Amino acid sequence: MVEAVAGLLDAGRVVVLSGAGLSTESGIPDYRGPSGVARRHTPMTYQTFTGDPVARRRYWARSHLGWRLVSRAAPNAGHRAVARLQEAGLVSGVITQNVDGLHTAAGSGSVVELHGCLDRVVCLGCGDRSSREDLDRRLQAANPGFGARVTAVNPDGDVDLDDGQVAAFRTVDCTTCGGIVKPDVVFFGETVPAPRVARCFSLVQQARSVLVLGSSLTVMSGRRFVVRAARQGIPVVIVNQGPTRGDGYAALRWDGPLGVLLPALADRLTGGGQVPAAAHPVAV
Image 1 (cartoon, rainbow, N blue to C red):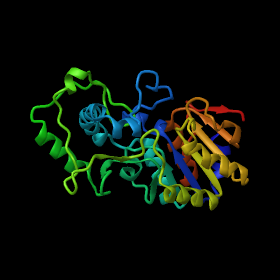
Image 2: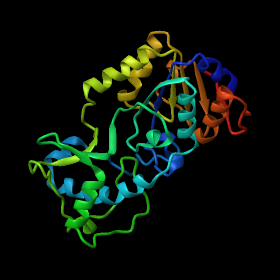
Image 3: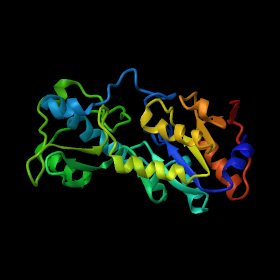
């Protein structure tokens, strides 16, 4: 299978579309894959965040702790393999649905963060953007001694805490206008900015192939780029553990752990390497 996948990608101008499954080996779970938490975790929606002060306080208490775990996560072998392919001139663009910043940390350049990134915050009043480190310092100052035992982090960067642990937590507002601040990420129920979507479509339009990594393609936010590629005759390769909603558009499907498969693919395309025993070819 590695030979077949490499044969579709070795012409270059590959656009990578990555999802949460690429970051699971860095300790960040996904919603729907083998480590998925969708059944026990309800993601924050934009409408709830902006309309319910209590829910907003709960979110920030949980995210205040969870972000520290996300910020310490390191790129894994899959992220590094993508960066190698880009450095070799084979990958022309990276679109990620993840908000963890790990593609950039691994060395990939010009990454389009479709859903934003947790390392920034934005004011919903004046639009001012600032770093998450700055917000973290302000939240620590507003909540001296706040801490709770964290056992796991959720895909969107928060953790599970009971209401008793967050009742005394104090949120902070924008230092410029006093407005509500939120992570500079696209919540459920929120729209991805149109210029960002247009940039992604432009990358796909110019691609020779699209390589989907670790995404179930359940939501249209990412799946639309696969649909566009397939309709324009651009081959789509999907590397993922388990089925996806884009399988019907794929020229090839490769099932297995991305931290094993992607380094093997990078070795094959940049020189050397063996097919990993853990790879499971999937007929399409």
